Amino acid sequence: MDEGQPVVEITLGRRYFLFAIACSHVLMATGECYGWTALRPVLLDSGLFKDSTAIERAQLMNAVATMGIAANALCKLPLGYVLDRYGPRVTSVIGALIMITGSLLFGLCDDNDHYTPKYAYFMLGMAGPFLQMPCFQFSELFGHRKATAMAYLITCFELSTGIFWIFGELDIIFGLKRKELFVGYAFVGVYCLITGIMFWPDAPFRQSHPPPPQKPPAGQENKGPGAPGPVRAPVNRNAHLMDKPLLTQVCSVPFAYV
Image (cartoon, rainbow, N blue to C red; front, side, top):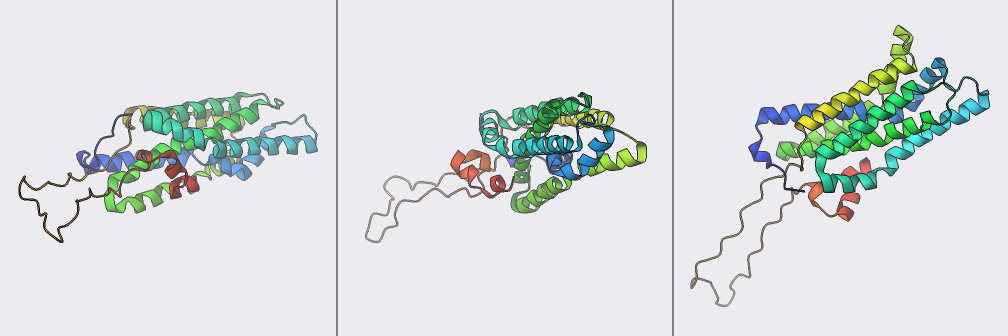
């Protein structure tokens, strides 16, 4: 993967524009699988697994929830490789396509299908990190305010768990059921797909590296007693997480959080 565009080449207005889109991705499409408690009444009201007994229905619902949450956790290691190898744009596109597919499967499957809802919720859980991780790079656009930008992204992730609460309100107010809600939610994936293709970079943004140290002209080296040792190149402490080894990424704070 080629080196990303230096941050200094991006105008302030474009930085805010890109960061706003990144926040919208995280807010609408990354943590919804953790909002199962709000989604469950909607599914029950829509008649999912309606021909099963009460115990069987509860077991099937629990299995669907487990599949989504497990997918969200387990996909992060292969996701790191994809992000390192192919960059933010490809990673985001993969996540958007998985999200669209999972939403349509969940919305269009039969009420008594015991398997498709599990696979669909698994895909929704897997899509979240693929859309979320490429957004972390946009905190690099704000230099010493990077921590503030990261806090915004984390807050958007926390709020994204309320997406299915909105589903419940739409069910109560407008009578929208599973099919209408999830087919409509697929358009969020379409939005993420289009904006990811158009605006996400092929490689993470990078900070400008400091110039290499200047060597003294020939014959002017200080070789006497007490002469200073060789000058070491300054360490770039702002190196992007994606530029670090995989083990360092796995042990980092952002990786531990997501």
